[in-house]
Image (cartoon, rainbow, N blue to C red; front, side, top):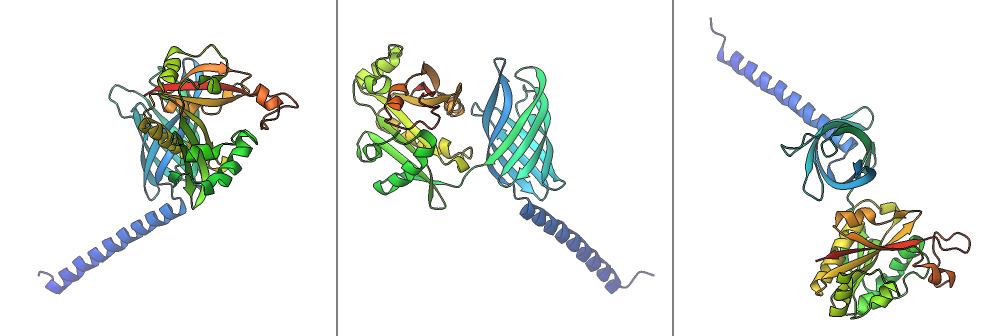
Length: 333
């Protein structure tokens, strides 16, 4: 005999209820894990690599999507090369997974292991490096991009700018913030996070024949810089400052893009950027590579006279000696 219709319906309904409960538990678990370890978002990613036989730290952008403990992401370099990363949150706050190059001609594959540390992920990668045709490994870390707003600086922002500048560059390094704010040739911006100023940028279009103010009497200035100076379309991004606690989260990059864009609007054709050199390391070298700027001049004693005359207090001064040099970068627009 066939079972009664109500028995069939009861079985079907019971099966649906069980399936819904199972689905609900799965969704609840995924939401719990996502809330416990919320790593979905946009990151600036840094990884150790080799370039021309020398170790370098490469900067890229990674977008991560998360479903419970599963993560899928895309890691993209400024030149357009990209990798897909696929992993899972394991243990008590770690991410383990694999990566593979998206381009069909790129055989780059490998694995990674990261520790979740607040908004950051920090660990190692290991795999086949298609560029160097070798297996390699190195540090691999992610810093979540800051949620900031960038606006033109006003006179009211000057104290905040100076409070950021002094610990980074020394007292007296910038005295003329008002000139960048109020001058037609100047451009000044601040980055705010939760209504607090966490970074600033100062840039300007230079007056004609203003090279001496930039480079002193140095004769190693390239021809294109000299021509731009005489023609009146030379620009300089004097300084980018970011709170030490928020460095590496994309704030400097966003400020630099804003300053560069404003100089373009002012008709600048070549932009020059000075970078501090301390113990052989240039503080903005990674940023300059990211934006396609090339170094063209190094002066190990650029700050020496001003520092010794105490026009500003170099934060890295050793005794009475100024040990900081300067490297200039340039880019034609």
